[in-house]
Amino acid sequence: MTQINYPILYSFRRCPYAMRSRMALILSGCQVELREVVLKHKPASLLAYSAKGTVPVLVLPDGQVIEQSVEIIDWALANSKSARLSPATPSQLALIEYNDHQFKTALDHYKYFDRFPEQSQSAYRAQGEVFLSQLEQILSQQPFLAGDQADYLDIAIFPFIRQFSHVDKAWFEQANYPKLQQWLNGFLTSDDFSLAMKKFPAWSEDDNGGGGVVIYPAY
Image 1 (cartoon, rainbow, N blue to C red):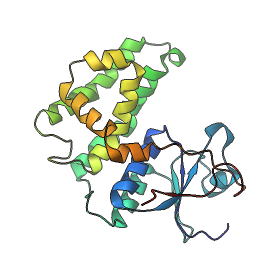
Image 2 (spheres, one colour):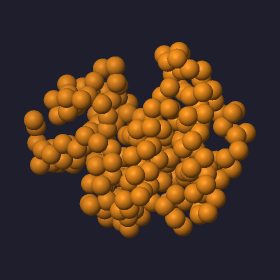
Image 3 (cartoon, one colour):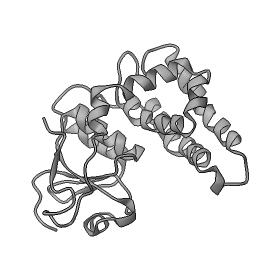
Image 4 (tube, rainbow, N blue to C red):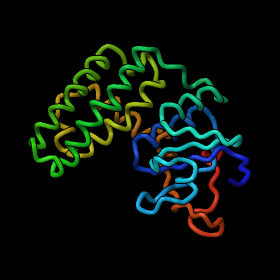
């Protein structure tokens, strides 16, 4: 592997796991070299660093490879140049674990219901609503999942609620989740999210082609 000066983040703009990682880097003031990946044409260097071949993957200058998005959030927090994120509590980590497994499974079945003909799309949506109802209850008592301000827990979960809401926007907008809708919209209209969702060309193994070298976020 060649010598690198910045941590390298292999990312895909619409992936919720990569999205939460980029948000954590922004909120922590950590800069990385961003490599936007085309999932159908994964760079050889990504596969060399991480055999799993999925994003996000963070490669540190010392060669350490971080392959899980929650661990990337932890790294950003440990190397933070700001005080906008704090460690998640055990109960918050349990909620993230539920999001990443049970809810993500329901979300995938809801979004790609034609691949899972065992049940209807509405049945899969109802499975996901178990989590939506839980979040709505939390947000009826406080403005953010983590308390009075957005924190680790909120950043880790909102990209997945965004993805769920996009499956059928008309349904989500009229569903009885007013606090959840307000909470989600706050992220979607924020400057931090606009920065996290900035479009970049696909990165190429050739520094003179593709997206080139992007230092992200650019302060």
